[in-house]
Every structure is written in structure tokens, then in C-alpha cells.
Image 1 (cartoon, rainbow, N blue to C red):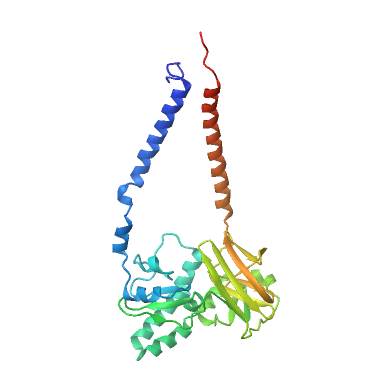
Image 2 (image 1 turned 180 degrees about the vertical axis):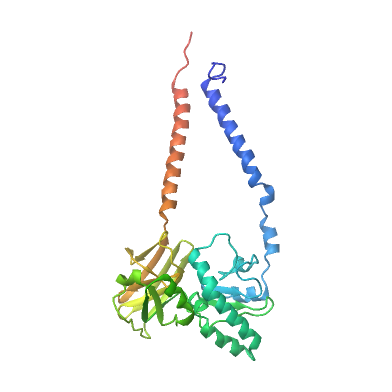
Length: 318
């Protein structure tokens, strides 16, 4: 009002308005993010102390997933997910497909392992039970924690980060796709929805001993694989299928991939030695960044223009 009635100058009005906005935002933000919301790193280290099982697993520097059966696996806020890539853990927002996989195939696999622990006469009996946990195996569940103070069980049936599947099994809908998870062999079969049939050119993709595929670089937003194949192959990747953000490349050229095993990624690749890369580039994030950058630049230009004009305009002398 002071500016409207020419009681204060325009520059002073802008400065006062800016301070009021900053103060208002600061007070509102403090209601939701105050000092009590922050924890010192030293306090975190005290809370998240690795167990004997955690320390044993952490010796393995490869990429794998861990199943902790000493807690409520999917309603757990223990340090399992802090130290490892966990099959479980809790989050208020989960992909619907992954939750459906949990509610069907993964839960059955957990029940099978609990029964194996109850009835096992030896460690070998438990190890053999892993042969029937198709969902856990395709999710690359390499370690199972059954006691925090004991070394973990190692699942030799875990399929790794990626593998070649020989037989594509085309099903007509999602219901058939998920119902097949508990009764298929993920090491040799790949369950594929009929909507992706156009990407499958063969009835079978035989695998030779010399055919290899491995994950060579892992970053949260970029995965790089290298493979060697004598002829065209069907690759299954133990990563969640999410086409809204993940883009695939073959030797640097964008290529297509499809959903397999209800939640995972699959791709038909040519013979030879090649590199496959998945990059996380969601269009919403990229567009939002561009809008944010443009808005910031515009604001800076307006402020710079204002102060620049004040410096260039000489005050009138009477």
C-alpha cells in the first residue's frame, strides 16, 4: 500500500515483499521440516549397526538381493534395506505389479521356505527348497537371513542380474502371466504377455555354454550389461519393467524391450559381442527440470534487469 500511495519507492517495496514471502515460506516449511526431522550421521550409525549376517553378506561386492525372514518381510523398517538391496522392506507407495507379485508368488515362496526350515534335517534340505522358489530366484535373491547372529543361507539357484532364457512362453493376458510364475522354470523359460508377441521371432532361443551376459556397471539411474552370443538370444533382466522411465540402448542406439515374468524386463538381442544400457530418463522429470530451469533463469534476469536499470539510470538533479 505504501508503494501505491507513493510513500515508499518501488525498490523498497520489492525488497519488503521479497522478505515477507521468504519469511512466510520459512515459517510454513518449519512446521513440516524442522530440526527434529534431521538426524546426525553419527546417530544413524548407532541405530543401524550391522549384524553378523549383514557383515557376512557385505563381503560380497556383486549385485544381488537379500531376503530377511527374521522380520515381517514386507512391513519391515529394520536396517536390512539400509545395508542391502532387499526383497522386502516397507514403503507407502509400491508399484502395483510388484505388490501383486508379492501377494501371489513371493508369499508362496516364503511359505515354502518356512516349511523347509521347520522340517529340514540338514542345511542341504533347505538349500534344495530354493529350487522351487521361482519368484525369489528370478528376483536374484542370493542370500536369506534366518538369524541375525548367524551367517546367511546362500541360494545357489538365484539367477543373477541377467540370463539367457531358451523358451518364450506366450500367454494371453496378465492373469495367465502371473499365475504361471509359481509353476515355471525361470532359468530356461520366459513368460511373455501376448501384447509383446511382435518382438518374439522364434519358438526357441537355444543357449550354448559360451553364451555369457553380465552386469558390468550399476548406478541407480543407469545399468550397463555386456554379452557374448553365438546367435540371436532372449535375455531376461532381473529389474522391474517400467517403460515410463527406463529407456534401453543396444551399442548406444535406442532399442525396444518388453515385460517378461510379469514384472521383469526382457529383450531379444543379436549375435555377437554387444553392450546393453538401461537409462532412467522419465519425461515428466526432464520436462519439470526444464520448466524449473527456465523459471529460475527468468527470475534471475528480472532481478538483474531491475538492479541493472537502477544503476544505469542516473538520478535527476534539480
